Amino acid sequence: MEWTPRHKTTTKTETLVRRLAALAGEIDGSLLQAASAEARGEWDVLCETWPSADEVRTGVVGLSDDELDVAIGKVQRFRDILARSMSGQLIAA
Image 1 (cartoon, rainbow, N blue to C red):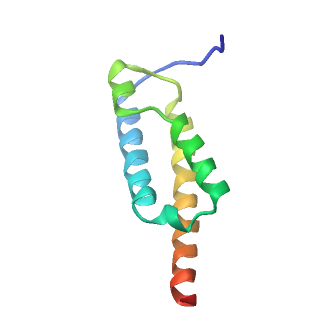
Image 2: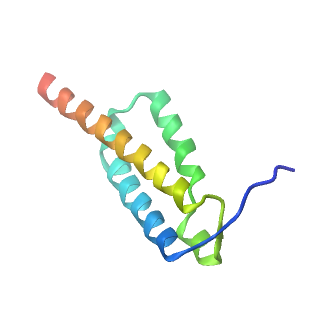
């Protein structure tokens, strides 16, 4: 059995999880099609690591607010890379 650290949620946790969900919506909506199969696989793994809104409502999650901040930074960079890739594909077409 694997032990997972648990963190009590804060109002910031809720905000961070909502931000992750919004960013994921942007990526899943149209940008993910520009990603390689490997990048899509990494994206799926990353999405599984952050808590859902349901988990936040329980009051305990597996990532601290600081870890969620780091995840948001990673997701924003991923989004920006995909957006640049998409615009490059549009120019090439």
